[in-house]
Image (tube, rainbow, N blue to C red; front, side):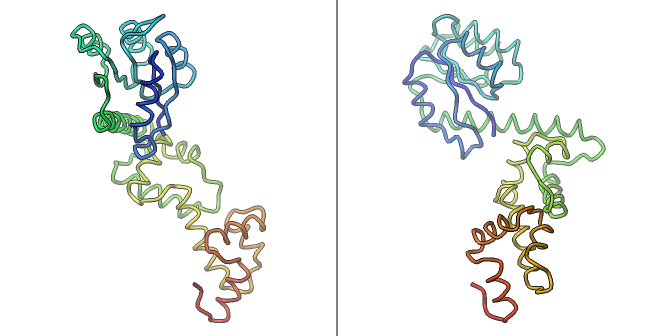
Length: 253
């Protein structure tokens, strides 16, 4: 998920932005807070946000000074100005800093989320393009990548699959991979791995010659008790009860 930051000296503005934004739905973390431009620059160096909201009229370092410094030091961050002033000078400064948009207070939910969605689209494209450059030997288009991830998971579900390992394999950011996979298959990567493991577990449990401990190992579980708990949580029945029902020919609900 992409990181966001709000820089404004008014607590009410932080509250409104948090309340109006569809953060999880859009694929964003809940925003962090800074209260002036100087503190905002320091926090950007610490957390490396992808999207930053900034007010123009703040103490210590005002919005204009912040935008100039942020644009120079963090050229890839999506800057969104939130201001109570419909002032051409402020708007000009925002444009010069390549700010994504200039929103006027009071904020409207649809306008805010439209800008956030646009920012995420741009970030996805940038991250995807960077991945294609790094992964020149095995380049994937946006249409091909979800299927390639699925194929990789189908073949490696018994390994410890993490978003970091997938990012290293495909040379795309983990945020980009997660978003693209979920959009294509309507489930998360970890959720899909669990589904593949449990479907395979059911197949193996139908063979009474294979011990449950062996099945756990084949599926990538070092602890058979943990496997049994995961299987029960997923299916509502224990592995031994599933095997008993499957081998007796009973219908398994």
